[in-house]
Amino acid sequence: MIEILKLTDPNAPPDQKLQQILQRTSGLTDEVIASTNTIVNAIKHSGDEALLDYTARFDGVQLTPETMRAPRELIEELAAQVDAELLAAMQAAIANIRFYHDHQLTKSWEIERENGVRLGQRVSPLEIVGLYVPGGKAAYPSTLMMNAIPAQVAGVKRIVVVTPPAQFAQAPIIAATLKELGLFEVYLIGGAQAVTALAYGTTTIPRVDKIVGPGNQYVAAAKKLVYGDVDIDSIAGPSEIVVIADDTARPDFIAADLLSQAEHSEDAAAILVTNSEALAAKVQAEIIKQTETLPRRAIIEKSLADFGALIVVESLDAACTLVNRLAAEHVEVMTADSEATAAQIKHAGAIFIGDYSAEAVGDYFAGTNHVLPTGGTARFSSALGVYDFLKRTSLIRYTREEMQRTARSIDLIAQAEGLQAHARAATIRITEQYRKP
Picture: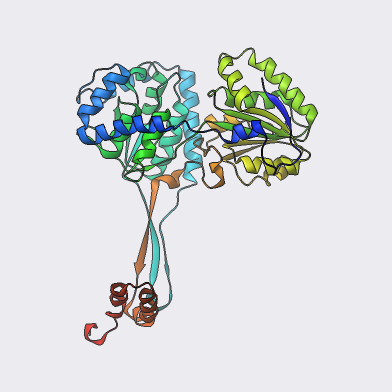
């Protein structure tokens, strides 16, 4: 079900299995892009009419502009169905997420230089954000929390939620999360058509500044196509976990954590990198044992067969080299000195350090954001956070004296670029006839 691979050189070209893992894609084929582009163009040109047509066609739900928005009473009615103990757990998770993200908030600043010049940066929130909540086979209240709370901490005043209509009434947990977060502007539309409506606006749906939230390949394709006209969080690929461990780690812990990612989807990746062949064999046995009792067994077995691996390397240093090369979404560290090992990890969406820092803790409860870079993009990108909902505007206050001192330098640089009007915009301010008394 899951192979044990021996790798002597972590920098060598990958063998066939490792290459298969590294080359996983988000599923955005030319066909998907073309189909989605048709939807995007229809919504851009026909607005609500096309939006309602696609909702009827894809979701089997007949809506009107008046029924597109979920009434607050419906949200509260559905929320009331959620078990009290589950609701308390959600409230605690929300508090943890808010606490963590409060520490990411940055403030405006100004500095004063010589000759009275003042420079600064104004930090301000986006005005309106669109949040996509997927439907499908499962409801993900944690993802709703992870996307909405950073925006709220940033100070975004208006968060518009879109979600497929057919599943909304079947997932009271989503309604309960919306209520706890105070989000009541909810439109019952989904898919690429919902993303496009948020990007360009319709008579009913407002145009937003940024779209966040996961979805299927058509949602991802729509986000890709509208990016530039609106900001987006990312084009997320399949989920992934890499565990780096030595022979001090518990095989049952590792197996459980690998399975927690493999159950996401058939294209999820779950990888162990270890310097212990004995540990790899024990983990393999544990995976077989634990998989037998899991309801998503078929998905897990396909995921592990295609994109899972137990990789044995010669040393922990070699393991760290390979893990950095993979630049995975989630990296767990379980070694005799987990802190020292973790310090060598340069590329990861999130690092879970120690035997009890399960990846599931980050998914739900610790407070860190679980919207993370996938597909090796942790080399250059980061977790979703408050900063993704803030704008930074430069402030420049120049004085007459400083312009007199620096205009010649500005003139020279502008002339070197062949931009005479730029040069004049500086020199005109130091020419005698234009000086104010």
